[in-house]
Length: 425
Image (cartoon, rainbow, N blue to C red; front, side, top):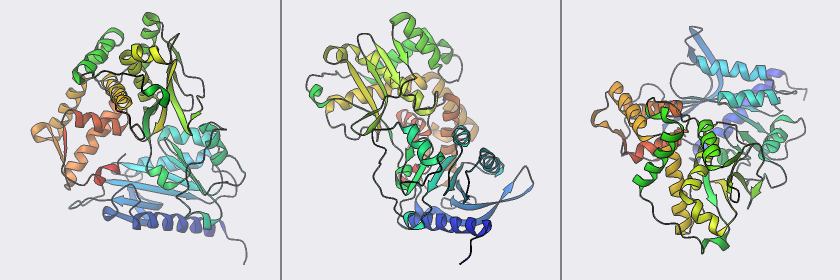
């Protein structure tokens, strides 16, 4: 058999990706409820800029009951190149995504070759996921491998090795968006932040109960002192000003340019050390990204709420990336993490402006009773997506954090299947 033409190679990869996604939908392992998903090859979508259609390689439309238009669209661009996928290719894909009419369009580019490092940086800035699969199609379906990043390299080194170097991929699948995973399942089950502590210290630690109102008051006191503008305008909290204030008034040092390595095979995102007090956030997180901001706010929460307790029995406390509160079985540790998360939420989304933003959005969308009912009605789901999008944009936080904050103030009531919500996050 002769060599495949460029078009034939592209068609072959599209078919493999289509089959992979079909398998995930069939086993209900996709991030949206499969019963609401339709998968397409070479489907045309209207471009408002061109006033004509754009054809995409593979797409999955998530359409809820009684809706006449998809609520979420996932677009997959396939590049079966001999050389690297350039930044121009990714820019072209980003342009396509921006032209497709409709809400909540998420793009993923998939290749068997490699990406340029410029392309990796650009994709991250545009929220585009980059994936690379083994050129051996028999490996494409081996998607349940355990995370194998190990401790020898930093996560970003692994990403560059897996996505940007020309040598053969030594794992079946690698995808990078806000996290890097070596399986599609792992990517769809992106992790959050939780703290870890040496087991030998747990018995000595006694973290008292602190009421939600008191945690809020402590966060607001810090904001009023360091960034008072957040009480006059709906805007993101300036963590730069906050750090400057803590450094000048409390002699807290901040370090953001170190790779913090791993602890128990989990990447360390942040830590706080004592004598002197220093707060770290790993340089493997993009500065001022959602996770970077939450990690820093979480560490500041430990400083404000727990310094007196932690500094008496240890010299440091580590934060790793894992499912929220997963593996934290001790009541004391779990209490400490819940408190730090609550403090971070109050720091990043202050109550006064948060409620003002939400009620303003409810008024605009004509939401009755100041609460979104999450059921199978597409109008309610789209209202939920709009408000989480706006919160994320205004406060520079993740949509997951926005959802938890809405739940905290009883602004949403989930009457439907919880799986209906997870596709957006």
